[in-house]
Length: 100
Image 1 (tube, rainbow, N blue to C red):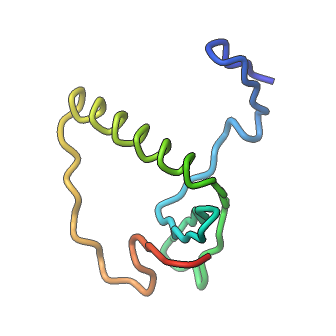
Image 2 (cartoon, rainbow, N blue to C red):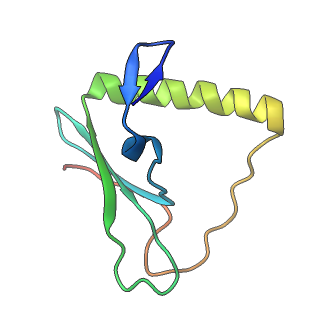
């Protein structure tokens, strides 16, 4: 297992490889946020959820702040990220839902 020396967190090789996602569905209830990560590829009849992350609302807010901080640092180093208009497909580029 790899060891993250900064935080004392270990990671298995399988998890270290990661999972590619180009679509996320986000839903929530009063007690949790559910993030379903999906990979949509041309020719796939029906995309499947590759990974589901369930977070407490407080952790979802911490994740949002961490992403904002990291995006800001990224754009300072590499330039602004420009969002393109999504190509028309049968699956929306991003989904934000209500109740899980």
